[in-house]
Length: 196
Image (cartoon, rainbow, N blue to C red; front, side):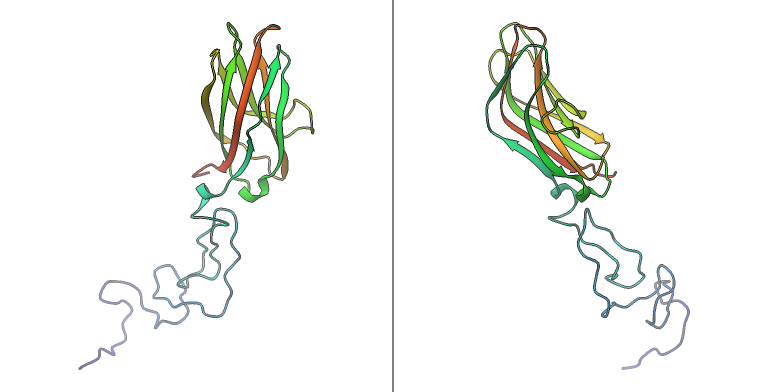
């Protein structure tokens, strides 16, 4: 069987040949890097910029199959009521937003909610602020005039990520002094916004 040993600048498919040495530009024939340890898994991952096959500077996602698998959450099945127009804190948890490496957030809020007859109940998700206080930035909202319990949800996209450790809060209020807001089965999930 004959072997083609002619030295060429391009192979038959038009790709540049560099004798399978260290590649110097994108599209060069390449080899694997069998000496460097890949970077640790982090955030949503990164393809790296090395020209070597299976580049040593690539980064696998921190968990699951990518950004959509990475989330922080507040899960609270307890039942609360809030009377009147003063917004009150019904749940809070401390979360670490550094895991999203500055990516904008997708906020998914769901709960079982109702209002007293003839009134409107509003429930806010707030990010940041002081422990035990009704403060922080409102990042998601649900409202209902329903006098019977309903399962509801709200999604907010491209929410700015303040980073670091933050308080994640749920608050409630009604439209009048006589109104009562009811909530249980609360869930808030923060994920990196795809494409951010």
